[in-house]
Image (cartoon, rainbow over all chains, first blue to last red; front, side):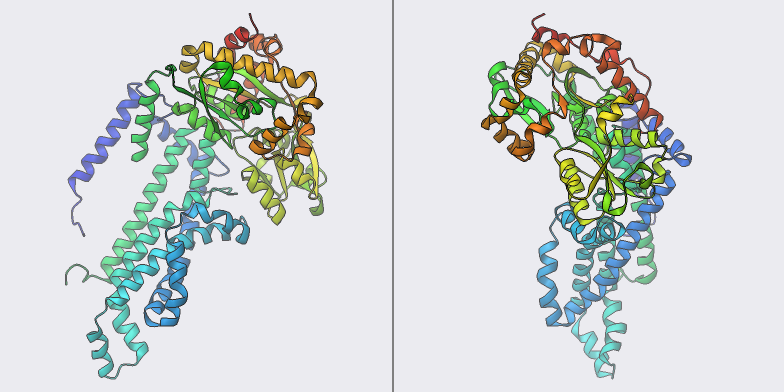
Length: 256
Length: 335
């Protein structure tokens, strides 16, 4: 899982795809409207650093989307982790939450987007609810799996030495479940990013998803490709941050 | 990187020949609008006239049509003038073969009178919804420019017509630039009309829809297109001869309410929002036949220039006369 050195094949594949992209457009094999050359995408990047497109500069779109995804994700984590723990500890909570989570988990966010608009409006709240709800399910499920995997012997050992239930939860169950919880957060964060475009589909005025959709309305494919690349880069940066947190907080993971 | 693969596949498939084999289908895009030629989809008259199986593909927005045309998934389609202008100026391999309808009314900027929007200046700081990439989006920007309001002084939101009517009812938006039948709907619900597309056309920026075709498809299927346009001209002529009688035909009103979702009682009024032409009129110097002086080419040029000035489309100046091909309309008119 943890790689000290980057896998060389990852670099080869990336370079190969970039070369194919450059060559097919350079040789005129594809109409530049269908696949804009790397140079056109880079020029769009430079222009958008200082001038507005789709209502904002590139920086404005990035800030708007990062803010939306971060807040939605933190909200999902703040609800999902305690709820997942509670579901494993209480038969009543499990009975109430399980059918709901299992029912909506496989639904595509675009399917319940109209309902979210009707209930929460068209502002920031509706967008963050859509993204947060999508990220919530994997967080709950991984938290439950983590809590369930804590051996009873560990809990009993702590209890027999006089630990109270709260102490068992904080000092035994949570640390033992942490690796799975962090895995759930990683998956949830990925889902949050992949729901971004759906969230910015309705009534957005800025954001990377909004920028991509607006550009597609007028076949500005260089801006579409730029938006996709930037969403990808930011999502990878977030992923690396969580992996770093994983190394810091659960250094024992994979070394048991 | 999947995108690259898809684009490569799409690019390669569009290189393949588009000629119709004996039993093959043609894919035609259409947009739900109250227009006589829609009835040709219901009663199969386009297929009868051409002898070819036609797969009619419905689109809600010009953006999706652009992508479908670019990929060759659709052979020809009706399309609003702003996306048509951007497709041509971006060098997509397409040509205009027919002026489908010229909008004289039925698209308008409407504000909520119950929120005190009764004049253009009341729009500042308000939420205005419109479908991005549409004729309405374009005319909203034209209207704001004419009112002396910068687009950054208002909040312009991207919504589809069905979303607009829902957001209007829930009170999420203050104003909207949209077309019928949604337009009539929101005007009845505390809407105050600020300006309509007929007025804006009078100020020099007209909107219309065209039939736009993949050039390779068109050059290999001229006979089919001629028969298709001839049927289009026949339907438009029948409507023009007696609009009231045409609209009262139950088959026609059933078809329009079915496919477009319009209230049958509103059909006669909404048909009057547009001008529909016969082949003879299409090829006159006023329209397709006029070359760069004709309305189609010159209006498309103005639209492209406006979109470029607004920073929405980045493209070189092109000669719109070359993107208008009246060959098939001429043949359909019997010339």
